[in-house]
Length: 307
Image (cartoon, rainbow, N blue to C red; front, side, top):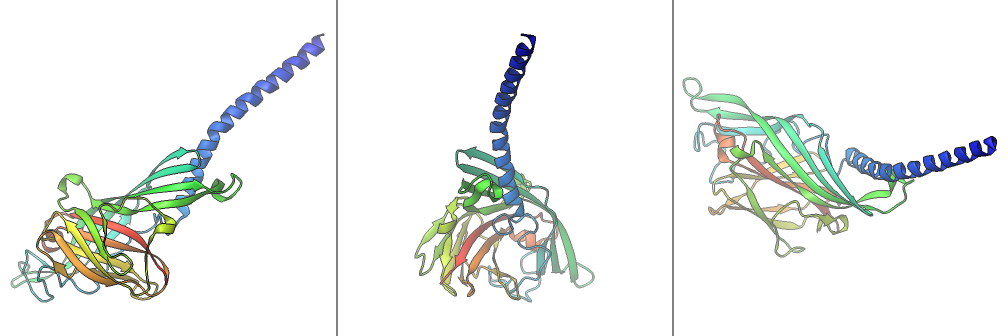
């Protein structure tokens, strides 16, 4: 009898351990799914790039700073204390992004936020430097926050890579200088006009779009872009990227419409690929005053060039 009772106790203990183990497995599956999605984000270099800033080290201003508000190269001291010749962002650190994941069934909703630190570098002519002016190199502290939203879908099995999770939809990116209390410029909306999209307006870059519905342009398609903002005398640039030199092209919006809107024309790249466009708005004194803070708001949009 004692032996039988002992066997019964062992069997009951095994059943209890099995039940508890099953309960723990249910909880760990959620944790494991989150880890799988985080691993996907950390390893991705297209949609979530945590290893480099879109501008990276300080770069020359491809195309010059001319074309906005009447500024032309060689006009010394026109707008303020300095006249910029070259400028760029120098990113010194990418602290780990903050990723919030909300899993609901076979869908996962992701909020991604990254903080960049570094310098905003300007090589400029300063009419007040020396006896009759001189070239100066200015470093301004750069702090900015970048946000992206995304949706993942489970399209496979737990034994598949990333436990079957795949990126289904993603937003563009919204970025702005910090602290928020010192930022004065804001992009309100973006209008795209071209053959493929006769009149399309974006009021935020953070709207989530399925990957298969990403903005798509024909190779070389001519696109008219208009930025609407809260500042009628800002400095607005478009950043695009190529597979050949020059890899990074930064050009100013050609027309200031004097009402807070800025218009420019751009041609899509020729080679089919997934690409990004960055709309970069700064307070004019960020570039043209040696003491004014880094004051910026930017939108990033993904797009596809496809025949």
